[in-house]
Image (cartoon, rainbow, N blue to C red; front, top):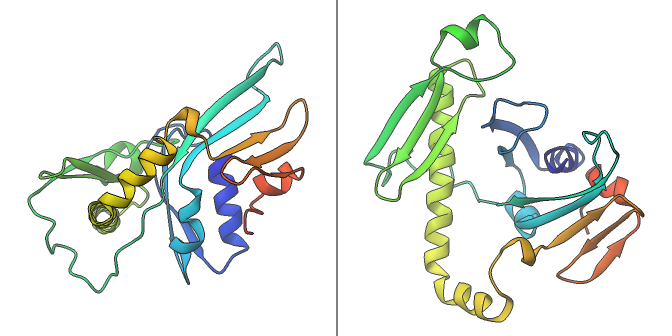
Length: 211
């Protein structure tokens, strides 16, 4: 539902979005997904979406129609400029190929087009299987790796501020949720950082998340 919300937001926003990789075989209900977006101030628009999101609803997968609560974590990373060399300061890395998982098909079964890259100094692992071309998957995976290394550099740069936030507000755990989407017994979206509430839960889940 979060994946749909953010892609709907991107469709109606100057930010251009594209699904880069879904890292679980279940395409209908992915447990882990990466979305790449590019456009004017895309990171600035979305960086406040990072955190734990809570959903309360009647589960469509429960035969007894009971209310369920689920949690998901969103992480937002800035993409480094493409003008920077793709291999600058990235090595040593380890590259593995494997067969792409998905709904099936001859190409999925026969070609090892998926790429997994491990950055050995930091043990950061990224993978991409969204394209039939191994070269394009590798390019995308390298972009993802550079984005994570950039995020790591930003965290190190603002380490002092980070510790201040931890001291004042606590760690980002399930108990530190930033937003709740309640669909039963009433409909409401609440931002726990500002205590702002919105009754139009359907509109928010359809991508209306801009201020």
